[in-house]
Image 1 (tube, helix red, strand yellow):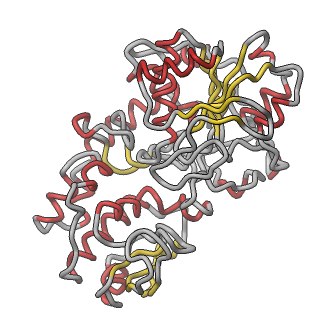
Image 2: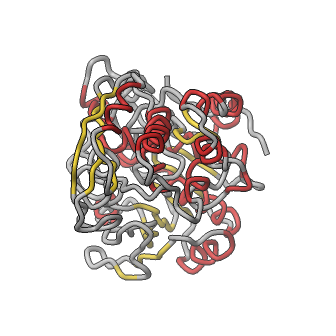
Length: 406
């Protein structure tokens, strides 16, 4: 079902306000605006919230603690995604069913649950409205946006209302980049055909999901930010950065992630187990030739330094590997996905140990077999990137209908 932009805009209870000129503290998240309005959108509702450690206020208080202590809202349940509500689990894990010791609220696990199974969780929790507030990082394969999608679908099945509290896209929302998922490659790191770097906020994505992909749209309200523009980086927001997952320690990680996460699909280390995950890449046997070859590509806004590191867990745990570190020199012109492709091409060119993971995880990450097969066939980085431009242009046209900020 396709909903018009006019109808979608009408469903936003609290719309975006103009951004104060040159005012670093001018951004107000969806939660801040909801609270400032006295939680009127949740009046007389039993509320459950999907959130994690990123659900914070500017003073670093968690919104669950704030809402639980406020008599104006009836918070009765919490739903935790991958890594858990309080963030204790590593990649591919969750915290399970528990009682939150700080508030006494029941915490339900949503990770890898979808459809009727997840709808039954909402029914068991006996909530009227499901609220979503999690910080995204702007990449298709970051699972929180698919938790959003699955929860929207499940809320519709369970007859629940759905409210999304918006937060910034930390790498700006200026444009979409990279290949678009092909439906036959749909998984939890990509349910629907969106670009690898989608350039949207979670509220915009929720509207896109409701208008384009859900068979039956959920009753959806969004509380937008005020004081945010599409060109804004996270460090202009005055919000504390809380790692959305254990291997997303800084906004710099988010900047490169939509490109270098593709190295999860190879036998090279993507830097997990180091202090610079996704900025350090390497394997045993790689030397300075890789950084030199990558620099020869003259990619905009980035340089590469020969680097050696010893991961404390994940690939090459406890072993010293060689590779490179990414140094973004101009984030305004840097293209993370195009850079990631260039790094894959040059790694294969200079190191005879290059290999894809045997399960073709690279296809799952990039959304089709095209990146893998073209690189294996000797295609250049420009040829690989050129192959997805048609589908990217089509996604950009669809995306434009759901953008809510200037």
